[in-house]
Length: 182
Image (cartoon, rainbow, N blue to C red):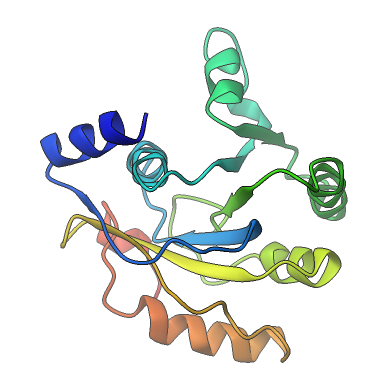
């Protein structure tokens, strides 16, 4: 699957660059998230790097006929009306699969539309599970997918983490640039 995904990415003009975390399990936040295409490109990039990943996707997408496909791709349905439940259900999934290597992929914008505030679920989940958080960038201008080599420093207030993220994501361009707020 690795070589197949690399070939498809190349055919689409994309490149999966950068670092692949050696941590057995980690949280990967990915931005900008402005299009459904981000999922396809991101999934191909992770497959090309050999990274097993699960994705949090709103439960409304888990309908016939694509429900089975989303689950096979690593999709986990999320009921966004119960924010605390998302953290606990994801944490318990991670507890169940303690010996399984995987990245939990989260788009902290929480929507493909422009938003002024990112969700802090990745921050809370990391504190709850003690997993490191890495930043992933899907840049449509450069046509690259990248994972930064150093985990985020989460031993500080969320507002300070957001300042760090504004530096990391500055200049990254989503499919629809007006929908990305950094």
